[in-house]
Length: 139
Image 1 (tube, rainbow, N blue to C red):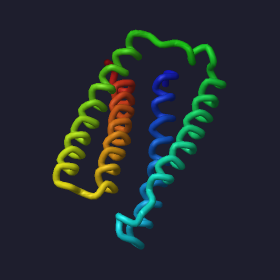
Image 2 (cartoon, rainbow, N blue to C red; image 1 turned 30 degrees about the vertical axis):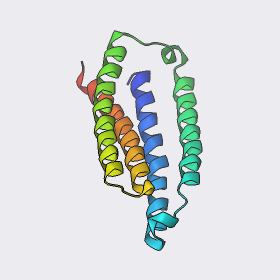
Image 3 (tube, rainbow, N blue to C red; image 1 turned 180 degrees about the horizontal axis):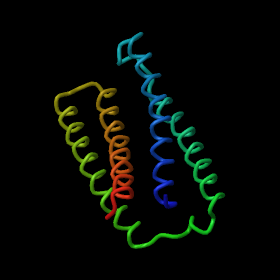
């Protein structure tokens, strides 16, 4: 597995762990209160720190095992990144349109913010997953 594929896998795991925790925590808060009373803004910022730590430590570990490969990036890697970004772009665009409709329907800010956040996270997950598929399947 190339460094870029390992890097993508690290980011997928970091996103799944960080936002999995966020989702579970948020669902616990939604069950106890109405969404208008939930202070989710600090949680959004709190989830970023573990995400950065997990990703950084993961990248340090995979770089330490093969430092020469860490800086390599060939044409195949760039093409896979481009194709993954296209998939992620479609997902985030759909989420943005959904959030726009939610805003026009006057949903509560909580739901609009979480539609946008879910779109960003799902776009990154779709991008990373498609990249891994392309690394395994070939371009």
